[in-house]
Image 1: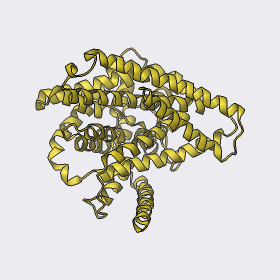
Image 2 (image 1 turned 45 degrees about the vertical axis):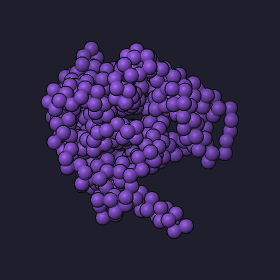
Image 3 (image 1 turned 90 degrees about the horizontal axis):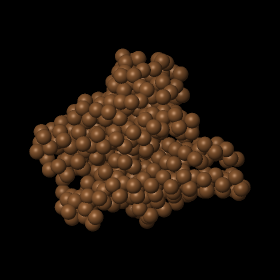
Image 4 (image 1 turned 90 degrees about the vertical axis):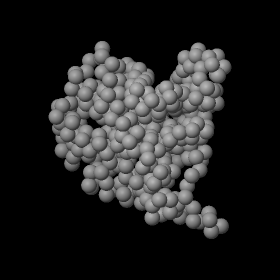
Amino acid sequence: MDSTNQLIFFCGLLLCAAIFASFLSRRIGAPLLVTFLGVGILFGEDGPGGIVFNDVPLSYLACSFALAVILYDGGIHTPMKNFRQALRPAVILASVGVMVTTSIVALGMWWLLGTDPLYALLLGSLVAATDAAAVFLLLRQQGIKLKPMVANTLEVESGINDPMAIFLALTFTGLILAGGFAGIEGGAWSVPVGFVQQFGIGAALGIAGGRLLTFFYDRVALELGLNPIFALAAGLLIFGAANILGGSGFLAVYLAGLILGNHAYRAKQVVKQFMDGMAWLAQLAMLLILGLLVTPSQLIGDIPEALLISAILIFVARPAAVFISLAFEDFSWREKLFMSWVGLRGAIPIYLAIIPVLLGVPGNFFNIAFLVVLVSLVLQSTTVGLVGRLLKVGEAETPETAEPGAPPATPA
């Protein structure tokens, strides 16, 4: 009984500490995601809190749940007009861009460090996904209002690039465990087949699930308080069903949220407000768990490799991915350069790094992913406002015009 009460107490303490820290970070202009991770580290085994937490399976389960909620809420809050306007460039960035980023990071590691190609590709895939939540929060804090097409592209990209990064991470992890293409059933053909299966099933279930949700809300009048709970439960049902059938649950839940969020029904505002709070709770919980899972004293030996990967990622891979992906799109070179610089890494690379650890792939993936995220957030988040103003990618606004404490546009 005492251990149960202590667990409840520490969960409440962690969440309250993170929320209070977010208030302080906004006052001093510190990166919010770094603040949440920092609270988890402070309460971890190397910090004053001294909590020893190394349950990798539980962390993966909790973070998968949290990411599903975050993407669901991201879809719910994305206007269909914005989605359609930015769909083509966002899809290219989320597919070709992620593959280009993965390939360039892997090539750099192989060439400069002599890393095994499959291991290099796995590491590249872990750090390939961006985090638009950090971008939009920082833009509000630093007084930059993006042009609609740029903002919409970054927002939609964030909602659909996570499934691609997850697919690549799972693919390269499987190849390493199987000893290469020869060790997997179907050989090299299994990769494109798996890609089509993941995204085909995920998209089909997401669209069908979203349509069924709107059909239900049009015809069934639930108690007002049950509406948001049902919406959350249905989103998790769609997520789980897609994964069970071999599809991308993350893509499915995002598309379902997109369809539901753009449909008019009686309890829409209640559902949106509830999902907003759930997304913040999921973001907090995921970052706190990942912070607890990190052991800072074990990071020192991985700093040189992580710095090299960060340099390749920030200064070579992301810009190349943006300029290649958007070569035939209607963006100026200034906008492309800005989109290159705001490719911040957030919780997703750290979450993805749990996959090879969970499946027993030898390597320091988790530590490197954590350090790369830290470098990206600290370096890019503290300069994104300055870069935006220098490149003149949008009309400046004062920080006071932004809604205080407003959640990220798409917290993913």
